[in-house]
Picture 1: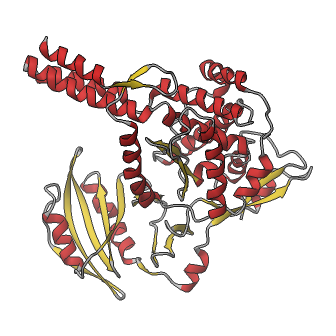
Picture 2: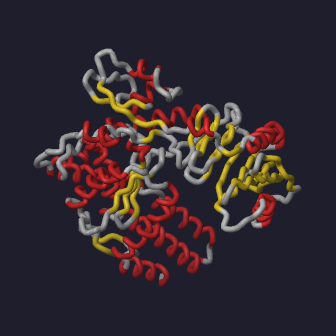
Picture 3: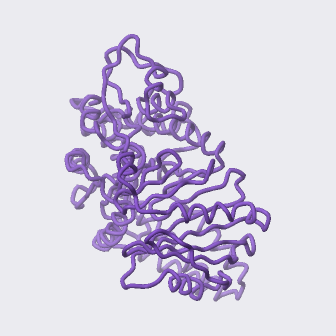
Length: 483
């Protein structure tokens, strides 16, 4: 009983007033600590994703965000709004007022009101202190498991409490997301936009999610979707429609309109897909103009360019290659990097390290095995030194037969690694958005025929312009194309 009493006392002492509801919520973090926490992780976010290099676009997004902060429940917080240089469709917020919008999510938005809907949703997570409340729930769940374990001596009961705590706080959850949608719609209305633009935003992003999930399933890969989306479509989600409808009471002067042309002009020339700072895929080649290297992608292998690693999957999905980059603080050989990698891990078996001949680059490789949750898997590790960086190539197969079949691909990829050439630099140009006025004869099928995007081009253009799954652009409307 005394352990449960202690748990109750701790939870009561940790309560604070929620700025949105006025109710007392569990929170182990003061507002100053909340701001400090966001500031600490802000630098890590910027380092991982990078800031999109377009000051005018950054200002455009920040101006919209700051205008919404003024009418929010926490106008005193020093909010910052950052467009990240990532093609991933995402937006998120850290405690303390750090809000991030990727250029990937901005690609599928078609009006200023829709952008404000995404921003308002993320501001809602901050004003309602969802991150702080999540942290408090995790802390309390951890404390509860320790106290229960001390009181009962039962590890099984501790694990059960941990599992329950994890289930309660995994993600923001349906209720917190709905609360952020309600707050976002309220902030839209108070800022002069239609609150129903929140429904429009979620509808566009839901269509994008459905389209990309279908493609991902057919290609055997996973895809990251925007966290603010539910299983059902907004047109069928009665609770979402109800919480957005509540914002009608805040409508006074909807003087902003939807701002479609304002948004399209602000985002014209924005990069679509890969950027030079992350590497660009063209004609079965991976080209990285900023770091000055290139390599060939094995035939029919799928490639996913993630912020911290490049991942490739074999056509039969039985082998994978990962490429990771490590900046060196001192001169070291590729052989020594491999030795250090193997010796510092209990999961990598030792093996015979051998040199690989690459023009003007030193490289060493080892056939080994890696201990995973699926058991010991055959693998090949290779390290290439180029300038001040070590490039680690990790090829893993699900069994011996798959390894024998694909070890040649592991080695061929490494042997194709080279200093980028002038002709490759010319190809390593990113795709960008351009604008055009649709004519009565304009169709997405005709636009797709001249698009540099070859796969699913017509439907991709429909998605980018909010006309998915089967609409054509109406004559006179400004639409996005890719060049």
